[in-house]
Amino acid sequence: MKYKAINPQLFIDNRARFIKHLLSHSVAVFNANDIMPSSADGHLGFKQNTDLFHLCGIDQEESILIIAPHALNVNHREILFLKETNETIAVWEGHKYTQEEATTTSGIKTVYWLSQFETVFKTLVCESENIYLNTNEHLRAVVEVETRDARFLDWCMKKYPLHHYQRLAPIMHNIRAVKNKYEIELIQQACNITGKGFERLLKFIKPGVTEYEIEAELIHEFVRNRSNGFAYGPIIASGASACVLHYVENNKECQDGEVILLDVAAEYANYASDLTRCVPVNGKFTVRQKQVYNAVLRVLKAATQMLVPGAYISHYHTQVGKLMEQELIGLGLLKAEDVAQQNPATPLYKKYFMHGTSHFLGLDVHDVGNFNKPIEAGMVFTCEPGIYIPEEKLGIRLENDIWVTEKGPVNLMAHIPIEADDIERIMLTSK
Image (cartoon, rainbow, N blue to C red; front, top):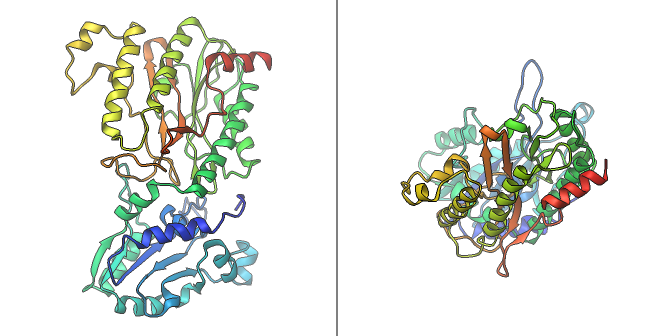
């Protein structure tokens, strides 16, 4: 791993929170993600299952975490099972965790090799009434491949059909949504790396540069700061492409007079950041571009102040929509009389601002959490309003990552330039 060692207290604390949600006499199983094949003998880069990482910090394939708080053998209440290495694996794949290293990383004292799993698991199952298994229950998830968790679920339910099976996902959605201080530090580090990348771009962008050259500058800056790279597929959209919400081609030349929408951010230690900024290719916004830019920025600032404990995201989105209505009227894109007569179920602002304002952020860029519960201190959300005007070949979205605290929202990206005048000043002085 490129990142520095994480304080194992993070994972110890997370497991302590997790255990409180289990029924008596239960065993819970978490599987690492697979290394996914590409074609021939190729494979994609490994990305750890975020639930497993959240509870133990082990960043290696073919790992299994068992939590059984009521196990008769006290040494079996937390167990890691790891792939046992050998000389051949060391030569071809490199170093794997030793048992001692796994304990140092996770704070889990009992570490076995995978060859011991079935024997130990059988003992724990026979002592238990409930078996907790994991599935991907993210509302946006579309899973078309068989995961390691899915294969294990099938194996386990056939082998132990008379136990009571429980879902891990609701528990993980609950505890992962509220971050502790160690997680905030890791997200902040991801934001800091992202900020370095963005400031590098302000000195690099000029007419004639290509979107893929911008992408290359970012990956350089991210990796040199211990990130594995982008937290998600980068969106580098110049001109009319900024009106395509999930534009990923990044293959156009940036023209004088255009604005580039940059939805780009680094991960650090598997934790995501999520940034959007918009910059003029030539370093200077037109009057109209700045009008739209500042309208979005005003909504961003007002929406940020609404991310407080006790608020509901559904109500928050409605209120942000009302703010956006007024800005769109001011920009001449909507008429006040039309807004007054609109169908509330299909508000007119959706023509120019068609996506939500905020989502959970953490180990996943669209992190797990329950939108039907009130916001709590410790949660982290994006805040990302936008206005998209295809007929003007202009799309403006601005986004920060916001940590909710009892004292008010904290912008984890406050150090990253966002005021239009600041962006112009930095770009023009670097030319």
